[in-house]
Length: 193
Image 1 (cartoon, one colour):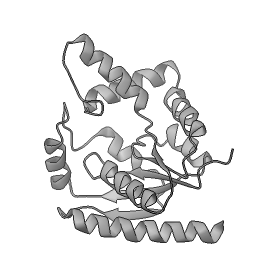
Image 2 (cartoon, rainbow, N blue to C red; image 1 turned 180 degrees about the vertical axis):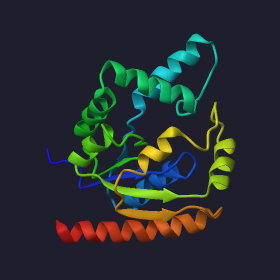
Image 3 (spheres, one colour; image 1 turned 120 degrees about the vertical axis):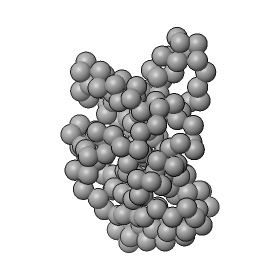
């Protein structure tokens, strides 16, 4: 079974618009008859976070984020087996039959990034001002809001192939930027195929 044709890792500080960009790329892919899967490194972290909240008898949405708790869970999992999160991702990646695979939650440059790099992922960095990011984080209903994180400095170590600016409050501007990027990236891929 051949792997995905296009592998894109979207990195940025929290609230910059990674998930929105991933959704827009997925929509563009589907419009062109390409299947697209968003595979999150943090999927097992969300499973464990849900157990915490279930035990506390507090209801939360699947991808609502308590940033501090998720970071703590990741640290503890890595203390047990440093490859646990990356291996979980790799298993799900290898099981997909999608034409395009997007990861929108890479936050580790030492363990997770080398695995994605080995799998052939390109990196897209999404920029947005801290004020814009903080406003977005407050608006999305996360359980604990942090516009800055120790992980923000870590992702700056990851080499970037493409950068887009999402500091505007206009979704239309972002859609236009993503469309241009998608067309350029897809054309470049098709030339190499």
